[in-house]
Length: 624
Image (cartoon, rainbow, N blue to C red; front, side, top):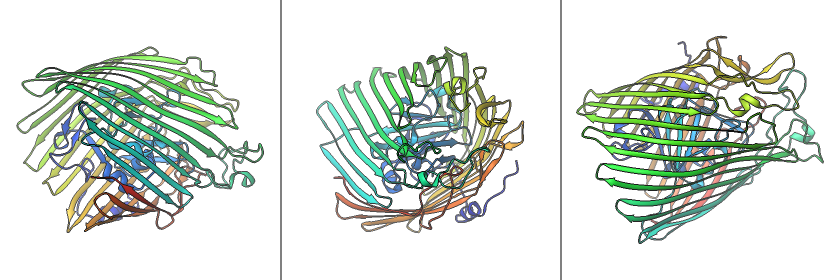
């Protein structure tokens, strides 16, 4: 593998003495509990997988507006966006495709069965208490689509006495953000409710001149030079009832309703108004947790999620309804713990596109075992999915770790994953000649990785190597002579890379950094996979002095290509972001954020704008 460092990546790498990938600043040894890596609570210091945890304090400090923006700054994650907040976006986990990452909200799967993508850009941070990011194939735990990883969002739960919260903020691009919530517990009941609205005028989605295809120009300065705004209205709720120490019920709900304006390839000429779409992302789940014996806990969850998108002034509709049922059993063994579970997922689509099939179901059985004995750690998982369209698929994960010393440890893992083609991949068709291919086969991957970690309580570091081989990889591309977009299947693709990160408290400063070096390539053509940079780096520094907390982050991303076959190069870029927080008293705080301080002009997708320098100031009321 031949990977060249950009100047920005080198600068970030040189900023600290050494770096790693699997340990983030917020993961304090022996304190943070991670669920997503094994589907069971586990201390972060015992996790063998590459996991990143983002707590509420860091979410508030980030100054971002959506889950996509928050994730875009993390190790192993790259993003693209077609024109600013709320626009069509993609997330690439460890170099895999944008529909290779699964999103869960409080244990409920959320996403589109037509595109296969999760609505990261529509999930407001106002409703999120915590995020866990699992990097690497996870189909043995979570089934189809988890080729690159899993993102799990946890909303707030109620505890203690009555606690109100309020946040009001405003910034450049006519941006406003207002949210409020209450939480608490009374007797056997616990509750938490939040609601908010984020709105911005944004920027013009498209920039010109740019010819997206070879036979027409898709930027009309008379129509497309205006700003294309975004509005998100969100709410979440949690209601729990504790029968006793062994039995409880919990209801979780998330609702996000957004309106997004964008430039419509010259088709927005009806009165000169922009086209756009209204989206709804929603999840609701009811979970019963029952400790049946001292060693056996049973959890039953029934849930439903929606991903709906409809156009205004340009009529279209793509609605996905996913009905889900899970029965998970956690059993403590003389050595370690076992996991046995059954899952059922039913996906239904209602669309203006005439899909040949509008639904499918998947039944799954999975088992797992994890244990620690002296210096040794193990994690084994196996899962069988029966897909109504593509038959049976078995995936596995095997991980082993060894503590060299109390401070140093090594680990290795081997895992497989698969993804069934989406309904768009198979059956999509439109009036411009773009179409799917019903003969496509499922994508399959085999990943191996190894890691070296160090943690002395004050400094944490690691280096991780991964090698993911994917067969039948699906990429959409403009095919001559008409240049209509169609899915093309690659027999062999390879994604190979290194992840480095480092976190510490140095001379009163909290410091963390990560470096990603990656080669994502179609081995048939020898060309790089589109929109994936060879290098990406992040350096974050902050300090607390009395009531003040301030800091900044430097992000660097190398060059990428916008289309398959290394077509339309996107230049590398670097961004500097700053933040400050002043605690007026125990309950009130003033927060300020300035992103892209140097006003860099960069592209996440060819021909689409990004935000320039931004500033945002808010006031938060959160009684302790």
